[in-house]
Image (cartoon, rainbow, N blue to C red; front, top):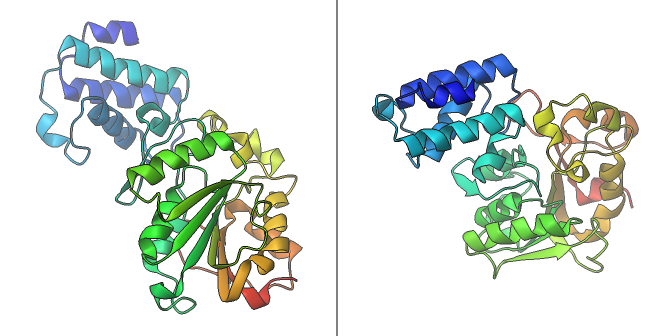
Length: 298
């Protein structure tokens, strides 16, 4: 089909129609920046042709050079044949207006914590200047560390990850946003390398997928690092460790905000004594809680 297309397609509109048909035919899974075949195809085509991502209509009738058509079809074929998430094909992921470099060393950024940081944490943190030190546990691509530094301009941010390859990606993003003086990347198994450190705010988007659910994920999601997804039988193996250790790393009056997604029900069953504050967010799968230092176990 793709070989035949190389001699038949002429315009951007042709390529878009062909892509949507192939994506639907292949039953691709979305959720890494788009949620449907049309938007995914438009994004991949515009990116490959170095065109503005927000402007498709003016270019639909444009004829493609043979080299341009070949480049577009190569990307589309990899998306269908190998089920590679679009951000790994383009090496970029967008969180709101922020662009981040990504590759298969990190999961694709899509945390609901970005919405939390954009909205602010009032009344728990009414004044952004109150946050002098912040921590991003399980930083992955470093996207939340960047957003923390932007949300709290007077802060210094520590960002940890157990994966050295992930930290290489995070370093690139920190440098892209010229935040090297304010964001410190630390290879650490959660708090292991942070003895004696205290923070005004901790955020974390840790692994929270139960092992039994991993193999039910679409192929696109299984291309992401398992280390960043799998979290024991109930999805709480990492969350438990964070809750056990967090209090000693929070300053008086500080808070921890954590995303747990599908593990919310298991978390509430496991910790009936904790008074979780569940933040209101867009998206059915959004599950982000906040706990004040005084609420955490010793």
